[in-house]
Length: 459
Image (cartoon, rainbow, N blue to C red; front, side, top):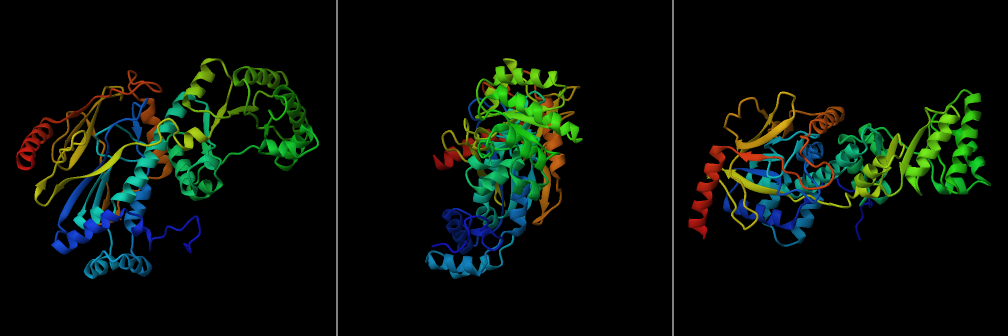
């Protein structure tokens, strides 16, 4: 049985083993064959999931941390030796393993599209091979969540969105990544306290129905909570009867006001959220509690949030849980990691439906005079971009060290600005996107030539 705890077992000493077996067997073969020249790999997403028109970059900070700290300690090497697969020379190589390469990437919070390199790694071949699994594990998940969260934020039309998902996320590590990725995408905070500590994300919470049910009556529960948390009371009012719950919340709010405090909000988690939110808002306003906010929750997603607001629901914030933390309607993106160039020249893959673009590249975004993107151009790295276009890929690591750290506020601001400038023809919630992504003439010519050559040589 494992001797590590069920949470927090990944350490710098063993994180090298968080890889697929074939990464290590290929690396050992490269080692034995003397093939450790430099190579460049791209991470890109092949296609959009259903009902998606854009993706949001997330997860880069974790990738850079991993690349700086990945190691193989004695226990990891003993385990690999016990598999009776690897050469002693290769195990000795892993003992001193350090990532020494360079990375260019699209910064977190940026909007991007299929086929565009999200991240480019250039390093000795063995290093590029060993890190593949972690990079894809990290980027695929966090891009999925950030893209989902951005959709919910857009649907909320300026109302706050809170990540309520930790209890439904697929593991402890996932809960932290969801909180961070969704915050980058525009959520105002999370219910996950550990994420608040680790990342400085605002934390939010109300109360559960079980709290209300633990008291002799609803009013007693509300009074106790307001007395214990006079600066942060948000009362859950739908345990029994929502309207009566609102009336009792008003009683407590008046009692709080007499003591110099204010009821921050009420939460509705069930029933006809359109009708009851309107009734509750009217009751609160009539009682002079216009600043008391209404939080709606209960099985929400971007479609339900949009429908609620269109139907006239009144809300200051939405708590979104399961469907945000699991991206329930599209729980993955097909991000891949492919060799595009090495010391021998450009590389290309021809597999049906999985062909790749050769060479180190840059993505150039062309916008109109208002800053609204018009099209992207994928070009070879050495090419000059189209007039007026800006590059998306930036250097983030050199010689195995991070050179361009972003903070969370920068990522969040970037995403906010990009979402505000999404081209209006793009469907925000329903329907796949059609944002134009072009190949530069030089890259297109290289692609055609390499496809033809590879087909002749390997067909």
